[in-house]
Image (cartoon, rainbow, N blue to C red; front, side, top):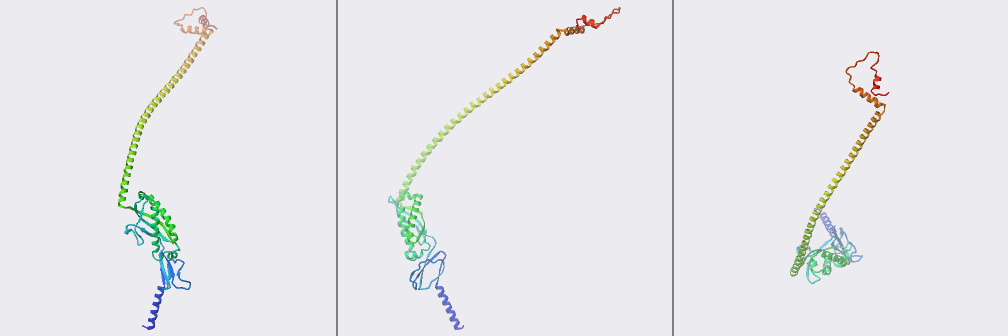
Length: 340
């Protein structure tokens, strides 16, 4: 192989290595801070944050510090298995009545946006800012949770309320240090063995008292239920009696109404019957009156003669000779009483 070609390839590889060594890659969830060791514009921390991507990194001239830009968690826990590399021992708090309580607390935080270069100047490189958080957190958390009485640590609501107060204090304390506290969560609580037994005994006594109260309330409620049952039975009997009386009253009124209507119908029938009888009697009287009137005149005589003629029984008649008309009807009627 040509010696010049070999030398050219070697120079190219060396140049590539130098070029790659002069670049620094910052990841998507990271932020970088550059320090200029030499330069015409001055030395020191560059007053800006560098986001994800490739950045110039000339050996001896530049020094880079890369920090996580995501939200992280700082665990204060008694169990090492629950702690990350940032974690430390659980928080020891003295209650307001003098007992010692161990709290497992998680603190969520992140570097304030655009302030990583100020964080480096304030807390130093690496995890220096994590030590600042841990130190300030312990002081603020002890001050806040220490206002609780020992028994109140059993109350999850009371502990949560204190964690909100601690969150406000820690944000106020760490904001000037370019750290944003996202949240503070209390995960667990533990008492010293002697105080644990003491509280358990007291809790048991309190529960017995509450049990007695509950049993007393149950007895009172059972008595109320019994009284309600008695009153209900009485009301049922009263309603049944009232219903029976009302039913009898309605039946009596119905019968009375039916009797009244029947009486009215009978009276109306009798009135119509009487009117009919009266009309018949009046008609018969008028007939008699007309007959009497007819009999008192010539019509009566004629009627009598007619009746006499009807009653005559003539079996044989002998008429004399001599020329006289013996069968003179007019004369016969005159003789029988008929009037012209």
